[in-house]
Amino acid sequence: LLRGGKTEEYCAHLIPETGYSGMPKDLVGDGVILVGDAAGLLNTSFFHEGVNLAMASGLMAAETVIELRREKDFSKESLSIYKRKLENSFVLKDLRKFQKFSSLVDKNPEFLEEFPSLFAELVTDYFRVEEKSKAEIEKEIIRKFKKKVGFFKFSRKLFRFAQAMGWI
Image 1 (cartoon, helix red, strand yellow):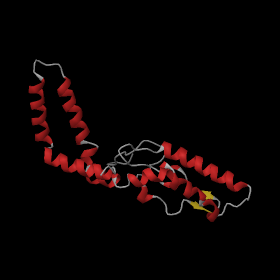
Image 2 (spheres, helix red, strand yellow):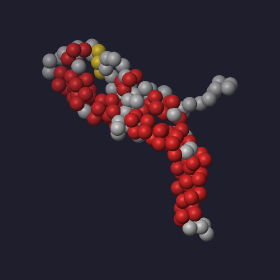
Image 3 (cartoon, one colour):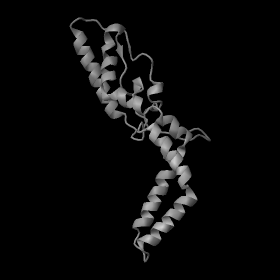
Image 4 (spheres, rainbow, N blue to C red):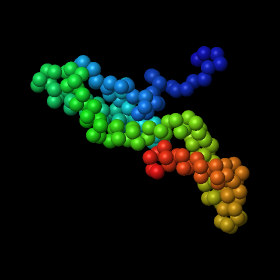
């Protein structure tokens, strides 16, 4: 580690988290097909998927090569079949659907930090065994929620979240 530096990930390489908008313009070239994270195929939605996209794109790349093997034509133009396969699969459909999510959480980090912690705390409060009625506990939870986040702020953020997830 560098003095004053902060470790971001412990792995062989950093994962590109740009989603659909950060994908390379060309996924194929003469004799080359990009798959998985090399192709930017990482779904940066709430689900943060990547392995399934890598496997699916690898399979489609292999199918493309097998189809073209007879003609021995691995030109960029011929390999463009791969891009059509991606377009018709869940891979690019999902990446397009969630393409706004990454910028949403960049601008609103509370989706991955504050909100999950608060909800875990509120659920713990609700199910803790105490000498209080559920009505009393619910009032305390609502009070805590209003103090820490507020219904208006949460509603506004939830609306943005739903937009980024492609729900509305």
